[in-house]
Amino acid sequence: MRFLTVLPIALPMATAIVCLFLREHARAQRIACAAGATLHLSVAVTLLCRVHAKGIQVVQAGSWPAPHGISFVADLFSAIMVVLTGIIGLAVALYSVRSIDNARVSLGYYPLLQVLLMGVSGAFLTGDIFNMYVWFEVLLISSFVLLSLGGGKAQIEGAIKYVVLNLISSAFFVAAVAVLYGLTGTLNLADLSRVAESRALEGSLTLPAILFMFAFGIKAAIFPLYFWLPASYHTPPPAVAALFAGLLTKVGVYALVRVFTLVFVHDVGVTHGILLVSAMVTMVLGVLGAAAGRDVRRILSFHIISQVGYMVLGLALYTPLALAGTVFYIAHHILVKANLFLVGGLIQRAGGSYDLKRLGGLSSSHPWLAALFLIPALSLAGLPPLSGFYAKLTLLAAGLQSGEYLAVAVALVVGLLTLYSMIKIWQEAFWKPVPADAAAVTPGVTVHRVLPVAALALMTVLIGVCVGPLYALSREAGDQLMDRRAYVIAVLGEGR
Amino acid sequence: MSPLILRTASDLLRPLLLLFSIFLLLRGHQEPGGGFVGGLIAACAYVLHAIAYDVAGARRALSIDPKTLTGTGLAVALSSALLSVTLGKDLMTGVWGKAELPFFGPLELGTPMIFDVGVYLVVMGTVLTVFLELRGD
Image (cartoon, rainbow over all chains, first blue to last red; front, side, top):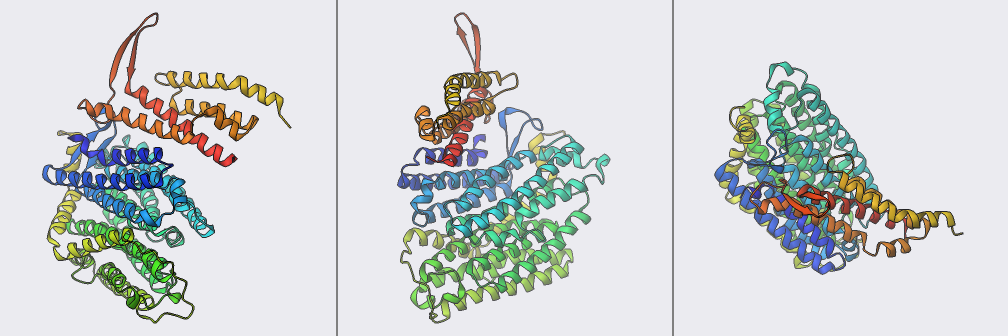
């Protein structure tokens, strides 16, 4: 069953085709999309089990041998990311059932959602740097449309910022690929890893490395390239925002981790040094933006930035434990952040607004919503026994091990400020009495909305309570990321 | 105002453009051409019609929703990629069959060709969807 490795790409495409043919029937599309997402998740879990049991899985598309053809490679990190894609895809598909109106559905919301999932899965599974660019384009183009679909002025404004910045990033990406190809004569990641070790290239790889850092840095929203994110992520409907917040910036982080563990490790002092500084500044500025915010979705958007800082910190430390921390952190973050954006949608439903000034009294009118908010919020801040605590703990341990005390101190302070901004939402939206100018409430908090939120919250708690399996998996993934030789052998075969 | 010259030209050109697009599609296997450029030219045939007459007329002439074209094209491309999997090979491996035609002799047909037909339909459908939507009904 080698086909299993590319099935997470083929399946969303098939679902998108089905949804496209069902475009006149909104209800049938909703069912098809949810069914497709369920299948996608189960395939992803099967793939993860297989990679865990049998090692790195490789498929050569068109049976062209690597490095001449395009390889699809599933190592543990890729497989974990695909599983997370499946989880978020399913949660968003369920949440969309009631929250995405028929007008958006008739404009093609569901096919685009599935194409986005296809692009994300493809970016995680490809073993070829140019093919990764193609998957980025697939997911970006569908995200452009999803972001602007059926929206008013504010949504279009956010979409324009997003589109422009991402086009710039894509231009840098393709330029970096061109430079890299000119230097090495190959695009296959495993082959690149092999060629990059040769002495002849010493020094000249730093230029493409910086170009890649810039391209992926924009997508991942790290300092100083993050400003587009809070300007666009708060505008679309909550289901779309959750998908973007949970998944899309993490594709950038994934790409950073992939190329800066597999290819560009010739001059760790420079490249990973820049990443370390950038990670620290990203954490601080992101959380300061969140602490100053007055709008639920803006606060959450700024948190994405500060959290991306933690993930990049693990990459910058570049030890097996730190990379394990990055993998764990990404897993925890995707679940929690997507959930918080969905909860944000529920807060808007229950309180009529996203503006903290106009919210209040939700803890007495919707006590279950308070619980659903508190779990991911405290997990994001890193309180035990939730998933965020172990994610931060792993990174802090790695930082202490590497002697980066400044980074550890920054991470701790940022955690405290995260807690502060979460408590701010809590106080304003839940504890404060209902303000005089409270917005009118549209009833309609349905089971379709609450179910995915509750399921994601449950996962956060479960990861925290039985942390062992995911931690062990992250450690394995971290070790695998450090072992470039195994990746090269898996793709190119022995004797290279 | 009815642009008589444009209308006459578009009526004459449409079948020619469609034929030429199929020629390019088939030629693309070994020489410059292919599904992408073929699809663009096929779309041009109907774009020209929409400019000479109107969008509703172009939709009638097309007689099939361009979104259905896109969906069909995607399905064709995906199934050509999956055919090799059902034969136990890796995704997108070329599968070839030979047909003996009267007069023309042997003809080799393979999945890359089917994939290109899919690309042709997707490009044609997408270009027409965008153009006809923007031009309005």
